Picture 1 (cartoon, rainbow, N blue to C red):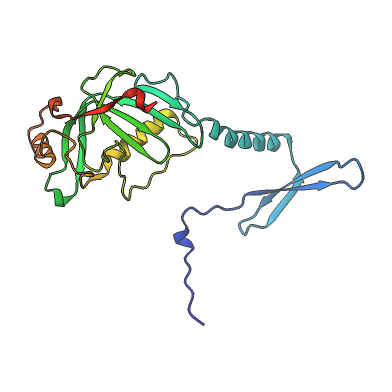
Picture 2 (picture 1 turned 90 degrees about the horizontal axis):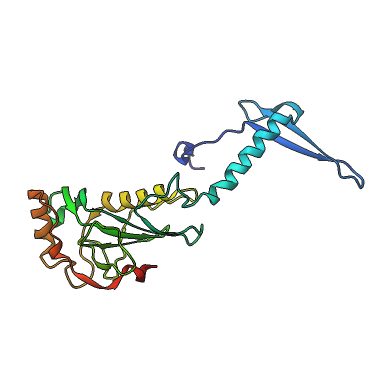
Length: 241
């Protein structure tokens, strides 16, 4: 027989039994129910049996209601809806958000093979469209809030398909069903800018320039993003709705 190893430490979070409920039902036609509450000792054995108290019942009801409300909270705002949110589909399974961000300095990461030093650089205004599992990004030429008629431009980054969808590679996407719209959009922006840009997708550069030389220069000089290098797409914001 082979030696066995204790691998429980690799299971992640361990949960220990704290209490248990036992439901008793009377025989006959009345079907009266009696509930008994047990505490658990350190070995997981039931002790201190007693009728379920009103306080314990209320605590249980509150816990169950909280879990039920988590799904209903998906893509709800924590307060007043942020002004950069353009559209929300709050469906738990097919939910999606459309939002925009203004031009700003961002930390960018590049794989060593590109020979671009990771660092801070200005990025253009952007339009983001995301579901729980996928992300599309586009560039804008103005910080003004876009409308349905606003023209979209190719996002000037690596790892993006020609239709704007982002290749997330090995990034572990974990959007919870209870995520507010603020948590949702913040998580996707973090996933995008905290991942490593590694390669171009498609046959052409996403900008009117050499993408490698462009980002090398922008990180080195710290100058604002030159919007004249953006490539116009044959679509407007309305095409994302």
